[in-house]
Length: 382
Ligand code: NAD
Image (cartoon, rainbow, N blue to C red; front, side):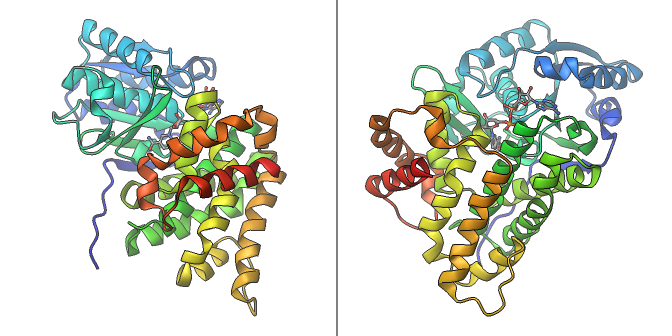
């Protein structure tokens, strides 16, 4: 047995944890912070809650609210320029993965300088970054507990993965109450993102007993609660989804991911498709492709998905896993690949780019461009 398990952040989990932001930030000796968010966070009143808790501790703040989904390198440089001018000495990120990844990238630029593309890859960030508190408002990316930031390179149309030491935040304030009003479509796509993290981490070449435990727990939580979170937004389903997301993040931060992410990144980078939608589109077909490699992991995976395994032979079990993923996507109304108007002539280019993605390295099965085109075509025909 030989593995590393790492999570960059201390996790505080529970309703209304947001009010502890100022107190926790004070512990780092900070005097002026940058609140990184998007406009929705202002409209929902979440930023006001952060501000109140900062004011209680006499911490000054500036607000950077320009983040958009699939955040770009241009935005990161804009944010870092403001952070430098305003002389801030910490960050609070409140929002989905796009916001949290932006705060991480701006933090890197402020301390390490240069261009964000300089840090693409693993362990390129050499200098320690400033204190960063992450407050997720979607249950999906788990960026709050990962040492990863994903930023779109606008010239190369590529989602750059920046990973390693000094990338992650220091504290994750996981407050499920912030997700109660998350719209149905975003709940569905971000929830499928979290499920993809858990499944890909579970079968990754870098999986360990620790990440397996986290991943299986996450799959169970998400399979029990995603549909209810989308259809009813009950309190218990929101809580389980946030726990499912954060445990998936703990798993994939060390185990890394697989071909679903390899295919999803070029799709999002070229056509600005939401990350969770892109993952959900490919998940059943990548699982179907990889499933011959699952071995002893197939039964625990099926069980954690709520499938009755008694008496089922391996082939039937494998089909049940794939069909359950397709059915879940149908029920929660994930858009189909065909509806996104991606030109079929681009499939080869998407497959070629997917081959070069970091996640391809840890996928349990070796792959090639032809196989990846086949997976895209299967998803297209759904
Ligand atoms: P997002 O952050 O792009 O947010 C999607 C939309 O949801 C936005 O319009 C936002 O305003 C809205 N929103 C967020 N919270 C809300 C709430 N509580 N109520 C109402 N609306 C709300 O979506 P995401 O899926 O969380 O993040 C996706 C990004 O994260 C992608 O760029 C992806 O590549 C990246 N990602 C990063 C990691 C990581 O480890 N760093 C992992 C997976 C994905």
